[in-house]
Length: 184
Image (cartoon, rainbow, N blue to C red; front, side):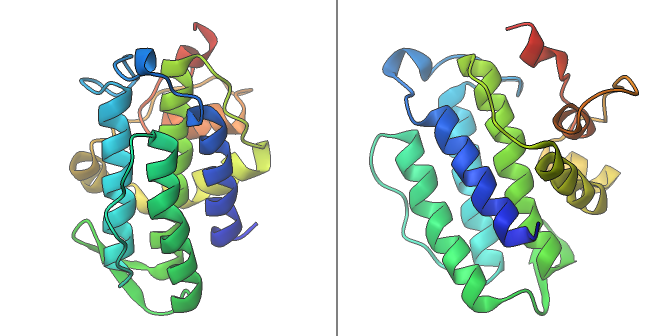
């Protein structure tokens, strides 16, 4: 798997979770403190747009009411622009200079982890293969430092059992309790 395939696969997984959000779902609480589904969507869209800008890729502001449509509307052109740009040179994002492939990896991290947040809030499955979750976890371990956690709002890692799956390891690394998915 590479960074492009990871981001594209994550976008498909998020689509499957958020495509049927109804009005009754918009204010459901998420695992992110103080964020309901609507606020989480706004955060995700904003972060994706800022990643694009950091890579020199401008997109039009998303329009429409559908969370799914707005996520697709910003992510697809950014992925296309990043493919044209390539993974050369560094990218400055969140006050840090990162190799381009790790900056693009943040897109996958945001999509998978916030896809998990949406899945918990909406009581839906998030279909992420073990190998994909392991790939994103590897990138997260290279990009999330104590300082970047504080800036980005990630809590300290949560302990997981030795036999935990890769998605559980990933969400735990980002400060979420993987058991939230099992108690829905």
